Length: 288
Image (cartoon, rainbow, N blue to C red):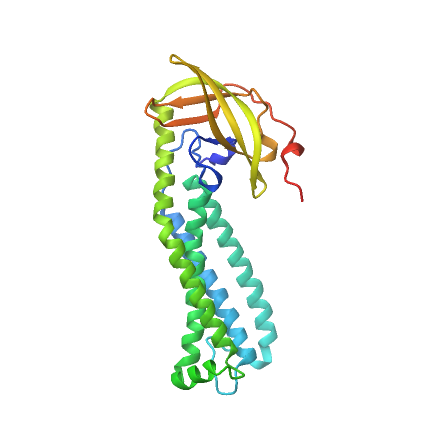
């Protein structure tokens, strides 16, 4: 599918920041697909493996004699295992996390919904990996290990840290999961509104007047803009937010299309029938 960000700038008369939603021309509203679910599962597994290996290394390094760890490392090859596992897991973790995030952003058309979707897999994996380390460590002597851990005995640091990490990850996961359904619904409804306005909305020619830069979301500036257009009811000026990249900030007076259903829903986009001119990228590049 086409990437809605390729048609930037993206305008919104209702939302701002990561909630600004886009839909590539000719595309249908996105949804959580099988591909996204598979990437999410792989991201979960990768973060779970990273958490499990990390807490197991900590356990191996600090456990007292007789303590167990989720993953044991033979003493003769401990350093080699550590190096190889770190490289492999880091690569897999980075690959699937970035692929999952990019696919979610492109398909859902909104950075917030994509971020929450990725965030639902990441802490779940961490919680499972760290939790497995705790369960394994307590399995041989649950009451004794718990007592020594609560007494802050040397050799039990790994269990305390793993348990704290698992608890934080669970709370984080609950927080993300509580917000995720609403974000997915809002992004889907906004994309459906854009599709409907392109198909059935009243179309008016307008111009954009740039305002101040509100902030940079990553390296992408978000500006306050004013959209001026004429309709049979007269002249109009509406306030909007515009999110774009530094090299695609339209010059003042650039032509836009305003789509209105006369019931309060409005969508603004650059006029696809004209060749826009853009301001110098240096003017809108975030300073270091």
